[in-house]
Image (cartoon, rainbow, N blue to C red; front, side, top):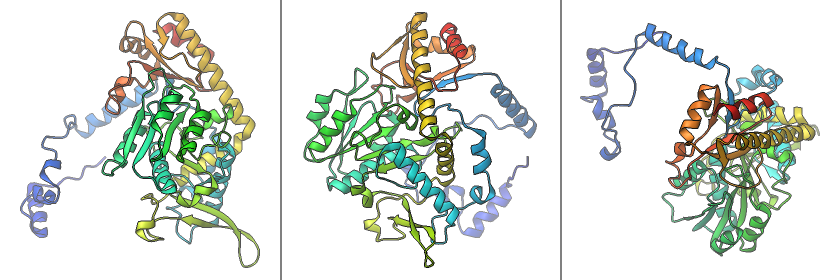
Length: 444
C-alpha cells in the first residue's frame, strides 16, 4: 500500500500556483459557522505495517462464527449464489448509469422485468425502475403525494415508521412550509381513531410502515380508508418478504408503496448501497420520480424497450421535474429481479413462512427463558421488540460474547427519535436454525 503525501514546500507551491496563501483560504466560500473547528475524531496515524496488522485483526474477528439476529431495516436473508453469477456478467456489472437514449436493450429489458415483478409482488399497477434506498423512497413518496393532491402543507406519519426514515423526511421538508404530524404509537401500533383525528382536508398523505419498525402489524386497511376519505394518499412502506404471507399494498388499496429492497437478494454490506422500491396506482404514475421503462415495437415490428417516462430536470423544464433523483440502482434492481424470478410466488411464500415461524419460536423461547419480555403484545411478522429484565445492555453483552448479534437498540437511534422506549429489536430470518435460536435464549 502506498501513501501519497506532499511536503510543506510542495503545498506552498501549489497554493501559490492557484493564487491563495493558505489551505484555509480554499474554504472561504463555506460560511464560518458551518466549518468544523476541531480535528476529526480519528485514531492516531499508523505505519503501513501497523495498519496491515490492524486490518488482519479485524478480518480475524469476522471469521468467528456468529449468528445474526439483527434487523431494523436490513436483514440476513439467504442469497442464492446464482445471483452473483448472473449479475457479475460484464455486460451488467460494468454498465454505467444506462439511462441515456443509447441505453442497451439488455439493461432496459432487465429494468422492465424488475418493474413487472414489483407490480406482481405488491399488487400495484405501476413501478419505477428503482430508487436509492428505502428511507429516501418514503420521502420521495411524500413529495409525490403532494404533487398528486396539490396539498403541500401537511403530512401525517405514524410514530411506528422507522425513526431514521422519519429523520430523512424531516430533513427533506426542513426548509418548506410543510407540517409533519407524528402519531404516537405507545402500544407498538397506531390508534386508528388518532389517525382519523389527525387527517384533515390539507393533508397530502398518511405515511405508515407495515410491518412497522417494531415488527408489529398495523391496521393498514383501516388507515388507508381514513386517508382516502379526506382526499389524502395512503403511502405504505413494506417488507418485500412479508408479502409472501401478508396482504399486498394493492389489495388493501394503498396509493403508493415503497420499500427497502435489500432483502431481495442483496447481502448485508455495511449499510449499503441498497435498493429503493416504489410502486403506485396508474392515476399517480405521471407524478412518480425516477424512470419508467416501457415496452414497444421498433420500425420492423420487433419487441423492444424504451425509457417511457423520465421526469428529470435534464429532460423537462426544471420546475416540472419530480425529483433530484438522477439514476436508479441498476445493478441492485437486477439482483432483485433475479431473486424474484428464481423464487417465484411459491418461493417467496416459503421464505416468508420460515421467517414468521422461526421468529415466533424465538420470541417464545426468549420469553420462556425469563430473561427478556416482549415490549408490545401485538401480532408481528419476523421481528419483535424486547426489553431485558436485568437491563438490555447487560443482556446484549452476554449474547455478543456467546456469538450472537442482536439489535439495533433504541439507544442507537435516540438521535433520530429521543422518545423511543428502551429495548432492542430481534429479527429472525430463514437463515437461523433451531439450534441458534435456542442457544440465543440460553445465552443471555
